[in-house]
Image 1 (cartoon, each protein chain N blue to C red):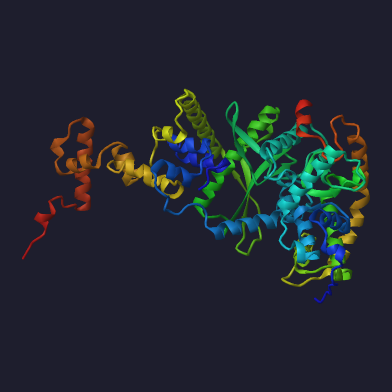
Image 2 (tube, rainbow over the protein chains, first blue to last red; image 1 turned 30 degrees about the horizontal axis):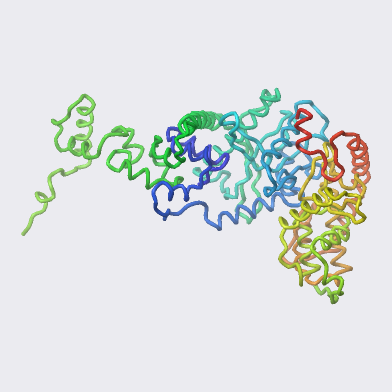
Amino acid sequence: MSLAGARGLARISQNPRCDLQTAMVINQVNEVKFYKALTGKEFEGEYGERTSARRRGRMFETNLYQNDAAELRRTLGPRFGYNPEDMSVRNLVDEIPDHMKGARQRRYMRVVQIFASVAAGLKPSSVPHLLIEPQLRLSVSDNHFIYITPDFAIFDPQAECYVVGEVKSMIVRAGSPERADLERARRQAGAEVLALQLLAKQLGIIDRLQDRANFIFASPFGVIPHPPVEENLHAEVSEIRKALESCRRVNSDLEALMGQGSGKDFVTYARTLRFTFQNTCMSSCALLSYCKARISDTTQVLGDEATDAFGPTTELKRLYELMLNPESARSAEEVSLAARLKEAREVLGVDSRPVSERIRVR
Amino acid sequence: MAIQSSPKSPADRNLTLYEAMLEGISDLGCLVYSKELVLYIQARWAGIYASVIPAQIERLMLSRLRKYETEGLRAAQPVLCPALTAVRGEAIFRLMARSDWPLESRLVAATTGRLRYLQITARVCNLLLNEGYRFDNHSPLLKLVSTLARGLPGITVKYEQYDLKSWRDLASELIITISDKDKKIRIDSATSLLTVTYFNEFWGVPEEGMEELGV
């Protein structure tokens, strides 16, 4: 999964105690190359989206954005009380393509201009109904930003402000996409809402915003969009806010460490950073095997439930000893653990005798 | 659909890419996105420019514009330049115009996006109906027109079925309903923009200028 922009923040929000992942997002590393730099080995696992999924996603977006965003206007316009044929559109990537120098900063300045017009209550000709890929940003420090790019933003005439939106080519059946897919999309959108709030706050129109976003998913019929779905994102915005605080803390620590002029590079410092292994790492992080190898003798390697039950630093060997010999408990905590392990043995019917005693040789 | 091509003249065979871009925009007669212009060029000069891509012509437009600007833009020949937003004169670098068009024809107001789309749809349909002989390879142009037709209200485009006449007629009818209003807005905007201190007629208002303006 990507580390860029809102996706990076979404990943941090799922594991905010992992400073290593946070540092990777802040430094915008290429995960596969970073894995090699960290371990000295080539990354051999699967990484990133399938080519077919990426191609489908591009086709779905192209279909929505072409012809002055005709399909997107038809999908969104009626929900906000617009005649789609009367909607004005600005596509920020068409205005400043990616290959131009400082493209994201320049697009951001144009978005600031548009929002300034909103704040000033200027007439509609200055405020387009629909923005395609408007550039927003969140600050990690005074001169370090994470650029956030919602797929679109539509002007809500009731709220007198823009509402961000995401385009996802995942197919919706029975009114809702797959839960895991929706969770990632919601967190991404949470980052976009937070970035929008930051800009609105700077312009004095924060009271017009709510924690919501619109989603355009695909119907089961080719690249035809499903009617838009609006979601409230209070929890996601809150989690992204915490993720951003993690970014600021880790960035500050790294600047202090690396700014001491030791000449060491980021990879060297990365090896000293705290990491937190959890279930979500298995589907998202290229460093899975690196981190797993470093905690392979603790309960963390068994998953989140085992970590919650037995503590993250409890050694597997010690757990096994307690299970076989509860009297060896050395602390109140171990006494409690031993009791629970004994109960688990009885419930599961675990035979703790050595294999040699269990096998009857004829 | 049978459309005849004619053999290329020697002048056409020696055309540079930049000249092809200028010729293409003139032929299409309106502001043109780089991806649309590429398909026109691929269709018209398939023997020479079959594999040109949008980023290539965008960079070419920028480099030539910078070069002519340093050499003095009062040169006789027109150059390609980006369209500009009507309200603030910001450049739209993927949307191309000719420098010899009046300023108001190079501006994009709130209604211009829609008008431009209808104009290019009508023009491409017309080219295929009446001037197809000028094109080496019609496939890129047919691809363009079927994409454009999908944006027309009430139209369903079926695979490899090109209802060019009705698409052209519908686009032409819709153009009439918005062209006058759009023209007035753009003329007013042009007058207003020419009074802005930092405004450059071809680059628009530079971002540096915006910073100094306290934006």
